[in-house]
Length: 495
RNA sequence: GGUCCUUUGGCCGAGUGGCUAGGCAAAGCUCUGCAAAAGCUUCUACAGCAGUUCGAAUCUGCUAGGGACCUCCA
Image (cartoon, rainbow, N blue to C red; front, side, top):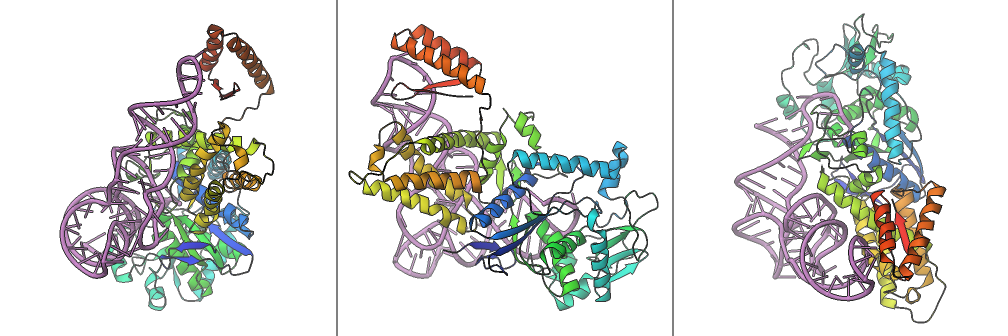
Protein backbone atom coordinates (compact mmCIF):
# COMPACT_ATOMS: atom_id res chain seq x y z
CA UNK A 1 0.00 0.00 0.00
CA UNK A 2 1.78 3.07 -1.19
CA UNK A 3 1.17 6.77 -0.83
CA UNK A 4 -0.44 8.44 -3.80
CA UNK A 5 -0.38 12.21 -4.26
CA UNK A 6 -2.23 14.30 -6.78
CA UNK A 7 0.25 16.20 -8.93
CA UNK A 8 -1.03 19.42 -10.47
CA UNK A 9 1.65 19.12 -13.11
CA UNK A 10 0.37 15.81 -14.48
CA UNK A 11 -3.23 16.23 -13.32
CA UNK A 12 -3.31 12.78 -11.78
CA UNK A 13 -2.56 10.91 -8.62
CA UNK A 14 0.94 9.52 -8.65
CA UNK A 15 2.65 6.96 -6.48
CA UNK A 16 5.01 8.94 -4.31
CA UNK A 17 8.65 7.99 -4.69
CA UNK A 18 11.09 10.28 -2.93
CA UNK A 19 14.27 11.34 -4.70
CA UNK A 20 16.38 10.15 -1.79
CA UNK A 21 15.04 7.01 -0.18
CA UNK A 22 13.63 7.76 3.24
CA UNK A 23 13.90 11.51 2.88
CA UNK A 24 11.39 14.11 1.74
CA UNK A 25 12.05 17.69 0.79
CA UNK A 26 8.92 19.83 0.94
CA UNK A 27 8.56 23.52 0.17
CA UNK A 28 5.37 25.44 0.93
CA UNK A 29 4.75 29.06 0.01
CA UNK A 30 4.16 30.83 3.29
CA UNK A 31 2.35 34.03 4.18
CA UNK A 32 3.06 37.57 3.15
CA UNK A 33 3.35 39.35 6.46
CA UNK A 34 1.88 42.75 5.76
CA UNK A 35 -1.50 41.98 7.37
CA UNK A 36 -3.22 39.36 9.50
CA UNK A 37 -3.56 35.90 8.06
CA UNK A 38 -7.16 34.98 7.43
CA UNK A 39 -8.81 31.60 7.72
CA UNK A 40 -8.25 30.77 4.07
CA UNK A 41 -4.52 31.13 4.56
CA UNK A 42 -4.79 28.96 7.63
CA UNK A 43 -6.51 26.22 5.69
CA UNK A 44 -3.52 25.78 3.42
CA UNK A 45 -1.05 25.71 6.29
CA UNK A 46 -3.20 23.27 8.24
CA UNK A 47 -3.40 21.00 5.19
CA UNK A 48 0.35 20.97 4.75
CA UNK A 49 0.89 20.52 8.46
CA UNK A 50 -1.11 17.31 8.28
CA UNK A 51 0.74 16.23 5.16
CA UNK A 52 4.01 16.92 6.98
CA UNK A 53 2.86 14.94 10.02
CA UNK A 54 1.64 12.05 7.90
CA UNK A 55 4.91 11.83 5.99
CA UNK A 56 6.68 11.63 9.33
CA UNK A 57 4.21 8.97 10.43
CA UNK A 58 5.29 7.01 7.36
CA UNK A 59 8.82 7.25 8.76
CA UNK A 60 10.16 9.69 6.24
CA UNK A 61 12.71 12.17 7.40
CA UNK A 62 11.13 15.38 6.21
CA UNK A 63 12.68 18.77 5.71
CA UNK A 64 9.74 21.13 5.57
CA UNK A 65 10.58 24.64 4.37
CA UNK A 66 7.95 27.35 4.53
CA UNK A 67 8.98 30.88 3.76
CA UNK A 68 7.94 34.21 5.17
CA UNK A 69 7.52 36.84 2.47
CA UNK A 70 8.64 40.05 4.04
CA UNK A 71 9.96 42.01 1.10
CA UNK A 72 9.46 42.98 -2.46
CA UNK A 73 5.93 41.78 -2.89
CA UNK A 74 4.42 44.24 -5.31
CA UNK A 75 0.85 45.36 -5.54
CA UNK A 76 0.90 44.12 -9.10
CA UNK A 77 3.35 43.61 -11.85
CA UNK A 78 2.15 46.85 -13.33
CA UNK A 79 2.75 48.70 -10.11
CA UNK A 80 6.41 49.48 -9.94
CA UNK A 81 6.00 51.91 -7.11
CA UNK A 82 5.85 51.01 -3.46
CA UNK A 83 6.02 47.48 -2.33
CA UNK A 84 3.40 46.32 0.12
CA UNK A 85 5.47 46.79 3.21
CA UNK A 86 6.43 50.33 2.41
CA UNK A 87 2.86 51.23 1.66
CA UNK A 88 1.51 49.97 4.92
CA UNK A 89 4.40 51.44 6.84
CA UNK A 90 3.71 54.93 5.62
CA UNK A 91 0.09 54.48 6.49
CA UNK A 92 0.79 53.50 10.02
CA UNK A 93 3.99 55.45 10.52
CA UNK A 94 5.91 52.34 11.27
CA UNK A 95 9.16 50.92 10.04
CA UNK A 96 8.61 48.20 7.42
CA UNK A 97 10.36 45.69 9.61
CA UNK A 98 8.02 46.63 12.43
CA UNK A 99 5.10 45.57 10.26
CA UNK A 100 6.91 42.39 9.35
CA UNK A 101 7.62 41.62 12.98
CA UNK A 102 4.07 42.29 14.11
CA UNK A 103 2.40 40.10 11.54
CA UNK A 104 5.00 37.36 11.69
CA UNK A 105 4.38 37.03 15.41
CA UNK A 106 0.64 37.13 14.81
CA UNK A 107 0.95 34.38 12.23
CA UNK A 108 2.95 32.21 14.57
CA UNK A 109 0.43 32.75 17.37
CA UNK A 110 -2.40 31.59 15.14
CA UNK A 111 -0.44 28.57 13.96
CA UNK A 112 0.25 27.66 17.56
CA UNK A 113 -3.42 27.98 18.52
CA UNK A 114 -4.28 25.70 15.64
CA UNK A 115 -1.65 23.33 16.98
CA UNK A 116 0.42 23.05 13.82
CA UNK A 117 4.07 22.08 13.94
CA UNK A 118 6.64 24.68 13.01
CA UNK A 119 8.41 23.95 9.72
CA UNK A 120 12.00 22.73 9.77
CA UNK A 121 13.17 25.97 8.24
CA UNK A 122 11.24 29.22 7.93
CA UNK A 123 13.40 31.46 5.77
CA UNK A 124 12.63 35.09 5.06
CA UNK A 125 12.93 36.89 1.76
CA UNK A 126 14.89 39.76 3.31
CA UNK A 127 17.38 37.27 4.70
CA UNK A 128 18.13 35.92 1.23
CA UNK A 129 18.69 39.00 -0.92
CA UNK A 130 22.14 37.78 -1.95
CA UNK A 131 20.80 34.45 -3.13
CA UNK A 132 18.07 36.17 -5.13
CA UNK A 133 20.55 38.55 -6.77
CA UNK A 134 22.80 35.63 -7.65
CA UNK A 135 19.96 33.73 -9.20
CA UNK A 136 18.86 36.78 -11.18
CA UNK A 137 22.42 37.21 -12.48
CA UNK A 138 22.51 33.59 -13.53
CA UNK A 139 19.25 33.91 -15.39
CA UNK A 140 20.60 36.98 -17.22
CA UNK A 141 23.80 35.08 -18.04
CA UNK A 142 21.74 32.21 -19.39
CA UNK A 143 19.92 34.68 -21.60
CA UNK A 144 16.42 34.56 -20.15
CA UNK A 145 16.34 37.98 -18.51
CA UNK A 146 17.24 41.54 -19.42
CA UNK A 147 17.75 44.76 -17.56
CA UNK A 148 15.99 48.02 -18.34
CA UNK A 149 16.89 51.05 -16.24
CA UNK A 150 17.68 49.17 -13.07
CA UNK A 151 14.84 46.67 -13.31
CA UNK A 152 15.40 43.09 -14.46
CA UNK A 153 12.67 41.27 -16.36
CA UNK A 154 12.23 37.61 -17.15
CA UNK A 155 11.78 37.06 -20.89
CA UNK A 156 8.74 34.78 -20.97
CA UNK A 157 8.38 34.51 -24.72
CA UNK A 158 11.99 33.54 -25.22
CA UNK A 159 11.74 30.97 -22.47
CA UNK A 160 8.56 29.53 -23.95
CA UNK A 161 10.35 28.80 -27.22
CA UNK A 162 12.37 26.17 -25.38
CA UNK A 163 10.17 25.11 -22.50
CA UNK A 164 6.41 25.40 -22.17
CA UNK A 165 5.79 28.32 -19.84
CA UNK A 166 2.19 27.48 -18.92
CA UNK A 167 2.90 23.82 -18.21
CA UNK A 168 1.59 23.85 -14.64
CA UNK A 169 -1.90 25.09 -15.43
CA UNK A 170 -2.04 23.69 -18.95
CA UNK A 171 -2.09 26.98 -20.77
CA UNK A 172 -0.65 27.92 -24.10
CA UNK A 173 1.41 31.06 -24.45
CA UNK A 174 -0.83 32.40 -27.22
CA UNK A 175 -3.85 32.09 -24.98
CA UNK A 176 -2.06 33.75 -22.14
CA UNK A 177 -0.96 36.59 -24.37
CA UNK A 178 -4.47 37.04 -25.61
CA UNK A 179 -5.94 37.00 -22.14
CA UNK A 180 -3.51 39.49 -20.71
CA UNK A 181 -4.94 42.92 -20.39
CA UNK A 182 -3.10 45.91 -21.69
CA UNK A 183 -1.39 47.18 -18.61
CA UNK A 184 -0.22 50.72 -18.38
CA UNK A 185 3.20 51.95 -17.35
CA UNK A 186 5.21 49.00 -18.46
CA UNK A 187 6.35 50.00 -21.89
CA UNK A 188 9.90 49.11 -20.92
CA UNK A 189 9.05 45.41 -20.87
CA UNK A 190 9.70 43.52 -24.06
CA UNK A 191 6.82 41.14 -23.66
CA UNK A 192 3.59 41.72 -21.88
CA UNK A 193 3.94 38.51 -19.85
CA UNK A 194 7.46 39.38 -18.69
CA UNK A 195 7.71 39.66 -14.94
CA UNK A 196 10.26 41.39 -12.72
CA UNK A 197 13.10 39.52 -11.03
CA UNK A 198 14.56 42.67 -9.58
CA UNK A 199 12.90 46.06 -9.26
CA UNK A 200 14.56 49.46 -9.20
CA UNK A 201 13.76 51.37 -6.02
CA UNK A 202 12.91 55.02 -5.82
CA UNK A 203 15.10 57.04 -3.49
CA UNK A 204 12.33 57.38 -0.90
CA UNK A 205 11.80 53.65 -0.84
CA UNK A 206 12.33 52.29 2.64
CA UNK A 207 13.23 48.73 1.74
CA UNK A 208 16.05 48.58 -0.77
CA UNK A 209 19.30 46.81 -1.28
CA UNK A 210 22.36 47.38 -3.48
CA UNK A 211 22.61 45.17 -6.55
CA UNK A 212 24.53 45.02 -9.83
CA UNK A 213 21.60 47.03 -11.28
CA UNK A 214 21.56 49.70 -8.60
CA UNK A 215 19.44 50.05 -5.49
CA UNK A 216 16.31 47.95 -5.59
CA UNK A 217 14.36 45.02 -4.22
CA UNK A 218 13.59 41.52 -5.43
CA UNK A 219 10.54 40.56 -7.47
CA UNK A 220 8.01 38.37 -5.75
CA UNK A 221 8.61 35.03 -7.43
CA UNK A 222 12.38 34.86 -7.18
CA UNK A 223 12.47 34.42 -3.42
CA UNK A 224 10.88 30.99 -3.47
CA UNK A 225 13.13 29.83 -6.29
CA UNK A 226 16.22 31.02 -4.43
CA UNK A 227 15.25 29.73 -1.01
CA UNK A 228 13.94 26.36 -2.12
CA UNK A 229 17.18 25.76 -4.01
CA UNK A 230 19.28 26.83 -1.05
CA UNK A 231 17.61 24.53 1.47
CA UNK A 232 16.25 21.68 -0.62
CA UNK A 233 18.49 21.64 -3.67
CA UNK A 234 17.86 22.14 -7.36
CA UNK A 235 15.39 19.28 -7.36
CA UNK A 236 13.20 18.24 -4.48
CA UNK A 237 10.06 16.19 -3.86
CA UNK A 238 7.07 18.34 -3.02
CA UNK A 239 6.17 21.92 -3.62
CA UNK A 240 2.91 23.22 -2.26
CA UNK A 241 0.73 26.23 -1.85
CA UNK A 242 -2.74 27.54 -2.44
CA UNK A 243 -4.36 27.00 -5.80
CA UNK A 244 -4.35 30.71 -6.44
CA UNK A 245 -0.59 30.58 -6.67
CA UNK A 246 -0.41 28.01 -9.42
CA UNK A 247 -1.07 30.12 -12.48
CA UNK A 248 1.29 32.96 -11.69
CA UNK A 249 3.62 32.43 -8.79
CA UNK A 250 4.41 28.78 -9.28
CA UNK A 251 4.43 29.07 -13.05
CA UNK A 252 7.06 31.78 -12.72
CA UNK A 253 8.97 29.80 -10.15
CA UNK A 254 9.27 26.89 -12.53
CA UNK A 255 10.41 29.22 -15.31
CA UNK A 256 13.02 30.81 -13.07
CA UNK A 257 14.43 27.51 -11.89
CA UNK A 258 14.47 26.12 -15.41
CA UNK A 259 16.17 29.23 -16.74
CA UNK A 260 18.74 29.17 -13.95
CA UNK A 261 19.37 25.47 -13.36
CA UNK A 262 17.83 23.82 -16.38
CA UNK A 263 15.56 21.78 -14.17
CA UNK A 264 12.09 22.12 -12.76
CA UNK A 265 12.40 22.47 -8.98
CA UNK A 266 9.87 19.96 -7.71
CA UNK A 267 8.63 16.56 -8.81
CA UNK A 268 5.16 17.01 -7.38
CA UNK A 269 3.18 20.22 -7.16
CA UNK A 270 0.40 20.20 -4.64
CA UNK A 271 -2.33 22.80 -4.45
CA UNK A 272 -4.87 23.28 -1.71
CA UNK A 273 -8.27 24.59 -2.64
CA UNK A 274 -9.89 27.77 -1.48
CA UNK A 275 -12.01 28.48 1.53
CA UNK A 276 -15.14 30.27 0.38
CA UNK A 277 -17.78 32.43 2.01
CA UNK A 278 -21.19 32.24 0.37
CA UNK A 279 -19.55 30.53 -2.56
CA UNK A 280 -16.95 33.23 -3.19
CA UNK A 281 -13.32 32.88 -2.38
CA UNK A 282 -12.11 34.32 0.88
CA UNK A 283 -9.32 36.73 0.12
CA UNK A 284 -7.53 39.71 1.46
CA UNK A 285 -8.41 41.88 -1.48
CA UNK A 286 -12.12 40.96 -1.48
CA UNK A 287 -12.39 41.95 2.14
CA UNK A 288 -14.43 38.87 3.03
CA UNK A 289 -11.70 37.31 5.10
CA UNK A 290 -12.39 35.92 8.51
CA UNK A 291 -9.60 36.44 10.95
CA UNK A 292 -8.85 33.52 13.25
CA UNK A 293 -9.26 35.84 16.22
CA UNK A 294 -12.76 36.81 15.15
CA UNK A 295 -13.69 33.18 15.01
CA UNK A 296 -12.19 32.23 18.34
CA UNK A 297 -14.02 35.10 20.04
CA UNK A 298 -17.19 34.95 17.94
CA UNK A 299 -16.78 38.62 17.20
CA UNK A 300 -18.00 38.70 13.60
CA UNK A 301 -21.37 39.67 12.12
CA UNK A 302 -21.76 36.35 10.34
CA UNK A 303 -21.08 34.28 13.44
CA UNK A 304 -23.57 33.34 16.16
CA UNK A 305 -20.93 32.30 18.59
CA UNK A 306 -17.26 31.62 19.18
CA UNK A 307 -15.60 28.48 17.90
CA UNK A 308 -12.45 26.95 19.31
CA UNK A 309 -9.40 26.51 17.08
CA UNK A 310 -9.87 22.75 17.21
CA UNK A 311 -13.42 22.99 15.90
CA UNK A 312 -12.14 25.07 13.01
CA UNK A 313 -9.45 22.53 12.30
CA UNK A 314 -11.87 19.62 12.51
CA UNK A 315 -14.25 21.45 10.19
CA UNK A 316 -11.47 21.69 7.61
CA UNK A 317 -10.45 18.06 8.04
CA UNK A 318 -13.92 16.89 7.08
CA UNK A 319 -13.28 18.08 3.56
CA UNK A 320 -10.57 16.95 1.19
CA UNK A 321 -7.83 19.53 0.74
CA UNK A 322 -8.42 19.82 -3.01
CA UNK A 323 -12.10 20.66 -2.66
CA UNK A 324 -13.41 24.11 -2.00
CA UNK A 325 -14.87 24.45 1.45
CA UNK A 326 -17.69 26.82 2.20
CA UNK A 327 -17.53 28.59 5.49
CA UNK A 328 -20.76 29.03 7.42
CA UNK A 329 -22.10 29.21 10.91
CA UNK A 330 -24.22 26.10 10.40
CA UNK A 331 -21.32 24.02 9.11
CA UNK A 332 -19.17 25.06 12.06
CA UNK A 333 -21.91 24.18 14.49
CA UNK A 334 -22.23 20.73 12.98
CA UNK A 335 -18.48 20.29 13.30
CA UNK A 336 -18.49 21.41 16.89
CA UNK A 337 -21.05 18.80 17.87
CA UNK A 338 -19.42 16.10 15.81
CA UNK A 339 -16.00 16.74 17.29
CA UNK A 340 -17.40 16.67 20.80
CA UNK A 341 -19.01 13.30 20.26
CA UNK A 342 -15.90 11.89 18.62
CA UNK A 343 -13.60 13.24 21.30
CA UNK A 344 -15.69 11.93 24.18
CA UNK A 345 -15.68 8.49 22.62
CA UNK A 346 -11.92 8.77 22.15
CA UNK A 347 -11.38 9.74 25.77
CA UNK A 348 -13.50 6.88 27.03
CA UNK A 349 -11.86 4.19 24.94
CA UNK A 350 -8.44 5.50 25.90
CA UNK A 351 -9.15 4.83 29.56
CA UNK A 352 -11.18 1.65 29.36
CA UNK A 353 -9.82 -1.40 31.14
CA UNK A 354 -9.63 -4.64 29.27
CA UNK A 355 -8.01 -8.01 29.77
CA UNK A 356 -7.16 -10.70 27.29
CA UNK A 357 -9.94 -13.21 26.85
CA UNK A 358 -10.36 -16.04 24.42
CA UNK A 359 -13.96 -16.99 25.01
CA UNK A 360 -17.13 -15.31 23.86
CA UNK A 361 -15.37 -13.26 21.25
CA UNK A 362 -17.72 -11.66 18.74
CA UNK A 363 -15.75 -12.32 15.60
CA UNK A 364 -18.01 -10.30 13.38
CA UNK A 365 -17.73 -7.23 15.57
CA UNK A 366 -13.97 -7.62 15.82
CA UNK A 367 -13.65 -7.83 12.08
CA UNK A 368 -15.80 -4.79 11.61
CA UNK A 369 -13.64 -2.76 13.99
CA UNK A 370 -10.38 -3.96 12.47
CA UNK A 371 -11.62 -3.21 8.96
CA UNK A 372 -12.50 0.36 9.91
CA UNK A 373 -9.13 0.87 11.61
CA UNK A 374 -7.25 -0.45 8.62
CA UNK A 375 -9.05 2.01 6.41
CA UNK A 376 -7.33 4.92 8.15
CA UNK A 377 -3.99 4.41 6.44
CA UNK A 378 -5.60 3.43 3.16
CA UNK A 379 -7.53 6.69 3.09
CA UNK A 380 -4.54 8.82 3.94
CA UNK A 381 -2.45 7.04 1.33
CA UNK A 382 -5.06 8.05 -1.20
CA UNK A 383 -3.97 11.67 -1.47
CA UNK A 384 -4.44 12.44 2.22
CA UNK A 385 -8.17 11.80 2.51
CA UNK A 386 -8.71 13.06 6.04
CA UNK A 387 -12.48 13.22 5.53
CA UNK A 388 -12.63 9.50 4.97
CA UNK A 389 -10.54 8.75 8.03
CA UNK A 390 -12.97 10.75 10.13
CA UNK A 391 -15.94 8.95 8.57
CA UNK A 392 -14.34 5.65 9.58
CA UNK A 393 -13.76 6.93 13.07
CA UNK A 394 -17.38 7.90 13.35
CA UNK A 395 -18.39 4.39 12.37
CA UNK A 396 -16.60 3.20 15.49
CA UNK A 397 -18.14 5.82 17.78
CA UNK A 398 -21.46 3.95 18.32
CA UNK A 399 -19.51 0.80 19.15
CA UNK A 400 -17.35 2.65 21.66
CA UNK A 401 -20.38 4.33 23.21
CA UNK A 402 -22.18 1.03 23.41
CA UNK A 403 -19.25 -0.40 25.34
CA UNK A 404 -19.47 2.61 27.64
CA UNK A 405 -23.20 2.11 28.18
CA UNK A 406 -22.66 -1.64 28.60
CA UNK A 407 -24.83 -2.37 25.60
CA UNK A 408 -21.82 -4.22 24.23
CA UNK A 409 -19.82 -6.39 26.59
CA UNK A 410 -16.19 -5.35 26.27
CA UNK A 411 -15.19 -8.97 26.75
CA UNK A 412 -16.65 -9.87 23.40
CA UNK A 413 -13.93 -7.79 21.79
CA UNK A 414 -10.37 -8.98 21.71
CA UNK A 415 -8.03 -7.09 23.96
CA UNK A 416 -5.64 -6.58 21.07
CA UNK A 417 -8.45 -4.96 19.09
CA UNK A 418 -9.18 -2.51 21.91
CA UNK A 419 -5.50 -1.70 22.13
CA UNK A 420 -5.41 -1.07 18.41
CA UNK A 421 -8.37 1.32 18.64
CA UNK A 422 -6.57 3.18 21.38
CA UNK A 423 -3.35 3.39 19.40
CA UNK A 424 -4.93 4.33 16.10
CA UNK A 425 -7.21 6.97 17.55
CA UNK A 426 -4.40 8.57 19.47
CA UNK A 427 -2.08 8.41 16.53
CA UNK A 428 -4.56 9.97 14.11
CA UNK A 429 -6.39 12.44 16.30
CA UNK A 430 -3.41 13.76 18.17
CA UNK A 431 -0.26 12.99 16.20
CA UNK A 432 -1.43 13.31 12.60
CA UNK A 433 -4.42 15.66 12.79
CA UNK A 434 -2.93 17.55 15.69
CA UNK A 435 -6.18 17.90 17.58
CA UNK A 436 -6.27 18.78 21.26
CA UNK A 437 -8.99 18.48 23.89
CA UNK A 438 -11.44 21.34 23.45
CA UNK A 439 -11.99 21.90 27.13
CA UNK A 440 -8.85 21.11 28.97
CA UNK A 441 -9.44 21.33 32.69
CA UNK A 442 -6.27 22.82 34.01
CA UNK A 443 -7.41 23.98 37.41
CA UNK A 444 -7.14 21.09 39.85
CA UNK A 445 -8.97 23.01 42.58
CA UNK A 446 -11.96 23.36 40.27
CA UNK A 447 -11.77 19.65 39.65
CA UNK A 448 -11.86 18.95 43.39
CA UNK A 449 -14.77 21.33 43.97
CA UNK A 450 -16.88 19.85 41.20
CA UNK A 451 -16.11 16.35 42.39
CA UNK A 452 -17.31 17.36 45.85
CA UNK A 453 -20.57 18.66 44.41
CA UNK A 454 -20.94 15.44 42.47
CA UNK A 455 -20.60 13.47 45.72
CA UNK A 456 -23.27 15.61 47.40
CA UNK A 457 -25.52 15.20 44.40
CA UNK A 458 -25.11 11.43 44.42
CA UNK A 459 -26.10 11.34 48.07
CA UNK A 460 -29.12 13.53 47.42
CA UNK A 461 -30.17 11.31 44.55
CA UNK A 462 -29.85 8.21 46.66
CA UNK A 463 -32.19 9.83 49.20
CA UNK A 464 -34.53 10.76 46.34
CA UNK A 465 -33.93 14.37 47.25
CA UNK A 466 -34.33 15.52 43.66
CA UNK A 467 -34.76 19.15 44.64
CA UNK A 468 -31.18 19.26 45.88
CA UNK A 469 -29.77 17.16 43.05
CA UNK A 470 -31.49 19.29 40.42
CA UNK A 471 -30.35 22.48 42.12
CA UNK A 472 -26.72 21.39 41.96
CA UNK A 473 -27.01 20.41 38.33
CA UNK A 474 -28.96 23.49 37.27
CA UNK A 475 -26.79 25.99 39.11
CA UNK A 476 -23.63 24.44 37.72
CA UNK A 477 -25.17 24.53 34.26
CA UNK A 478 -25.71 28.26 34.65
CA UNK A 479 -21.99 28.59 35.36
CA UNK A 480 -21.26 26.65 32.20
CA UNK A 481 -20.47 23.35 33.86
CA UNK A 482 -22.50 20.43 32.57
CA UNK A 483 -23.13 17.38 34.67
CA UNK A 484 -24.09 14.14 33.05
CA UNK A 485 -25.60 11.13 34.77
CA UNK A 486 -23.97 8.12 33.23
CA UNK A 487 -25.45 4.66 33.22
CA UNK A 488 -24.72 2.93 36.52
CA UNK A 489 -24.97 5.99 38.72
CA UNK A 490 -21.68 7.60 37.77
CA UNK A 491 -21.53 11.31 36.90
CA UNK A 492 -19.21 13.13 34.58
CA UNK A 493 -18.80 16.81 33.88
CA UNK A 494 -17.48 19.15 31.24
CA UNK A 495 -17.10 22.85 30.71
C1' G B 1 -12.83 36.26 -24.42
C1' G B 2 -9.20 32.18 -23.05
C1' U B 3 -7.79 27.96 -19.54
C1' C B 4 -9.71 24.93 -15.97
C1' C B 5 -12.73 23.17 -12.02
C1' U B 6 -17.44 22.20 -10.05
C1' U B 7 -22.99 20.81 -9.48
C1' U B 8 -24.42 14.78 -4.34
C1' G B 9 -30.53 14.05 0.37
C1' G B 10 -33.19 19.81 4.87
C1' C B 11 -27.69 21.70 5.54
C1' C B 12 -22.25 20.39 5.30
C1' G B 13 -19.64 16.97 2.74
C1' A B 14 -16.67 11.66 0.95
C1' G B 15 -16.94 8.79 -3.10
C1' U B 16 -12.10 3.51 -6.56
C1' G B 17 -18.51 1.87 -12.96
C1' G B 18 -21.78 -2.93 -9.53
C1' C B 19 -21.71 -3.18 -2.51
C1' U B 20 -27.42 2.80 0.79
C1' A B 21 -19.69 7.02 3.23
C1' G B 22 -19.85 10.16 7.33
C1' G B 23 -21.28 14.58 10.22
C1' C B 24 -25.30 17.95 11.60
C1' A B 25 -30.58 18.64 11.63
C1' A B 26 -35.55 16.19 11.88
C1' A B 27 -39.04 12.18 13.47
C1' G B 28 -40.08 7.70 16.35
C1' C B 29 -38.50 4.25 20.04
C1' U B 30 -35.24 2.47 24.26
C1' C B 31 -32.70 3.87 28.67
C1' U B 32 -33.84 7.54 32.59
C1' G B 33 -36.88 10.53 39.01
C1' C B 34 -36.34 14.56 35.46
C1' A B 35 -32.76 16.64 32.06
C1' A B 36 -28.73 15.90 28.98
C1' A B 37 -26.12 12.36 26.77
C1' A B 38 -26.06 7.62 24.56
C1' G B 39 -28.10 3.45 21.63
C1' C B 40 -31.55 1.67 17.83
C1' U B 41 -34.74 2.85 13.67
C1' U B 42 -36.49 6.16 9.67
C1' C B 43 -35.33 10.06 5.82
C1' U B 44 -31.93 5.50 -0.32
C1' A B 45 -29.51 11.78 -2.94
C1' C B 46 -26.32 12.33 -7.07
C1' A B 47 -28.18 19.66 -12.07
C1' G B 48 -30.90 18.36 -16.94
C1' C B 49 -30.87 15.63 -21.56
C1' A B 50 -28.66 12.05 -24.69
C1' G B 51 -24.99 8.20 -25.30
C1' U B 52 -21.29 4.02 -24.05
C1' U B 53 -22.10 -0.39 -20.88
C1' C B 54 -25.12 -6.37 -18.67
C1' G B 55 -24.74 -2.26 -15.10
C1' A B 56 -23.25 5.03 -14.53
C1' A B 57 -23.17 9.66 -8.96
C1' U B 58 -18.64 7.64 -11.25
C1' C B 59 -16.98 7.33 -18.44
C1' U B 60 -18.41 10.48 -23.19
C1' G B 61 -21.16 14.53 -25.51
C1' C B 62 -24.49 18.58 -25.23
C1' U B 63 -27.38 22.15 -22.19
C1' A B 64 -27.99 25.03 -17.72
C1' G B 65 -26.20 26.95 -12.90
C1' G B 66 -21.86 28.10 -9.72
C1' G B 67 -16.69 29.08 -9.05
C1' A B 68 -11.37 29.81 -9.87
C1' C B 69 -7.29 31.52 -12.65
C1' C B 70 -5.64 34.76 -16.75
C1' U B 71 -3.90 41.28 -12.13
C1' C B 72 -1.53 41.42 -5.36
C1' C B 73 -3.81 37.03 -2.80
C1' A B 74 -3.08 30.37 0.63
